[in-house]
Length: 292
Ligand SMILES: [Zn+2]
Image 1: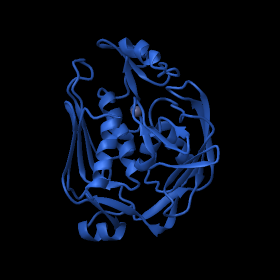
Image 2: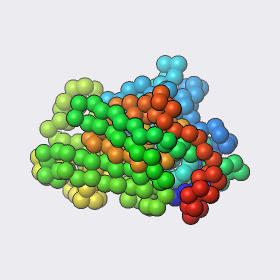
Image 3: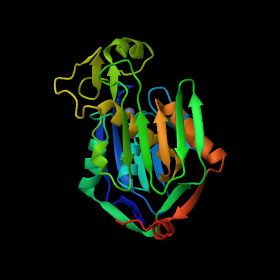
Image 4: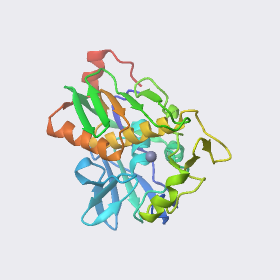
């Protein structure tokens, strides 16, 4: 959806659950925020802006940090906010990691829709890509092309038959968010012990992740989409791109990219002055976009 105005939520709301990696039980409280304030986490009284300048860790999740206070696994709630067109929000958290809930963005979206989305009396600002950008890491890359619409593609290449060589494309102006929001995080049974030896995935279970054992899905309910893993990787990409601080308009194609490459891409956009900030009216007039 294309939004003309900035958005926040109507009133505060909370949700809790365990962190995927820490296994800790954590509560988050979302609060309305004023126009042009952005997405800000608050932990132990310290503000941690959800911005690439504060992004510190990218091992199997995205972590932000300020003044020694860290918040891990922010990518799914960030994707939810992007998909709902929320520009301004305070997220208070009483632990180190955002709850994983069902492993997707669905529960964050339901929570926000339940309290309602408030339109603010201030125009929305978009980051419009002005030149093509390419980043790579070994066999992975992200390429971005100038476009009138925010079009995101994730392309996977696995030897695994189920995940296989699949790609999925999402257009934020035209497609319904529920094409990507219910897609859950996933892992391979064979790597669970390795992740645990790194101190990761302590809260992981079939309740919050799809687990593949060779060519089979261990979750009794099966997959939500036949290409659920690629859709989830796209959700992660969308969440990480929102660390730019503004919704990006461009045609972005990730080939096997993960959190670290997503962050490298966002940093390069800033270093190369690859985008310009434009108010929504300017974009809708120029491109004759249908307005929500
Ligand atoms: Zn994820």
